[in-house]
Length: 300
Ligand SMILES: C[S@@+](CC[C@H](N)C(=O)[O-])C[C@H]1O[C@@H](n2cnc3c(N)ncnc32)[C@H](O)[C@@H]1O
Image (cartoon, rainbow, N blue to C red):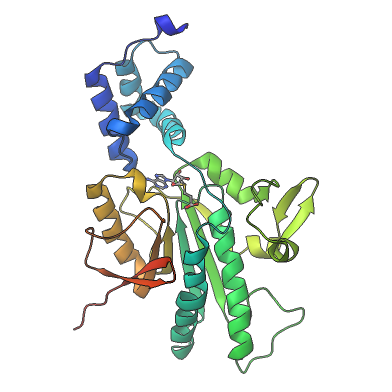
């Protein structure tokens, strides 16, 4: 199909498709982002060899259109990410949040730590979290040893601690790449040699996440728009995801995160995102230029 034969996207069709995308995944394509949506819709229409956007809409809402719907959503997500993104925030996570969490847990003899990276893209965020938690726990253990023997060679996570990092996304192709855990030199630019040495194997010209670190992270599909989301988390990272949602959807998501967190749990959002005006159920904590939000507990 040459461009002059491309069906025209009418305002009515655009509105239908905008509403469908919003309803399915929460992404909001307003004025500035309409162009991007139009471009991706045109590509999918061509791929499906359909002659109108209305037929494409009918396909998406049909029983056998599920696969095409997830393909469209994959084409609409922005998957930009990097290792050690927003260092000030990660320092706050390591120095304050994890210390506080380990102390509170140890006092209750609860040795399980559960962290969720919601919107994990190609895996750099959850693997960064895994490296920071493993290092912090080893250092915490050194200062607060438990009356148990540690087997040799020392495991990445000292017993009886258990660390589970859940990483989820709506995009299956980024989840596959994340699960593979193999990165090129450019993607590794923020990973210094001490981390490279301990947590990666060099395979050809790529860096593969070591087995021990990989085993801490579990990847899964979760659409943040749905009600059924992973519960009982100590910390949630949802960075650079909410910025694609409108205010109503952001409010709904923050409420869901509140319920998905354990008491006193923490939520980290992106550098350009904030909970200001969205909720009263979290209080901001910050150190240097790093920011996080802690669940406010209702006093009985
Ligand atoms: C810009 S990336 C951010 C990656 C990482 N959190 C970071 O800050 O580096 C945003 C990710 O959110 C995912 N995403 C967008 N909408 C989503 C939804 N409704 N449910 C789950 N993931 C979603 C996208 O597929 C994408 O991988």
